[in-house]
Image (cartoon, rainbow, N blue to C red; front, side, top):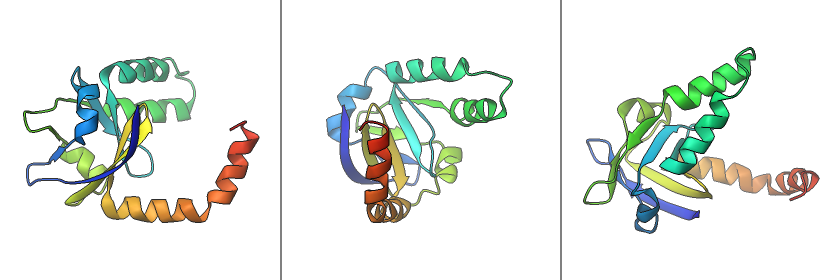
Length: 143
């Protein structure tokens, strides 16, 4: 399970160290892809396979299904952890997520989100301000 927030630096080649507590969960392979809200999603290979199957079974006749599949699947790249615990974030994904030198890894149970540090702080402040409304909406969903 991925939980917590961790800040790391991106080097000049686009490499970033994965938080050490998560590395063992990604050793069998990982996929990084475009996420939502200007973030990247990092999945262990097994989790990615399950998600990719669900996405690929969405109805082709629906525009939103096609758009979501294109967003998630066409941007995906397999990554491996090097001997120093780093992964390489492709340039096109760093541009998509507007990443600078500092990024935040946010653990979200079955995936990691990777955010530009400034964007993450801004997003988190907004979510914290709306926490009561968010909690009410989640209550309607049974959470």
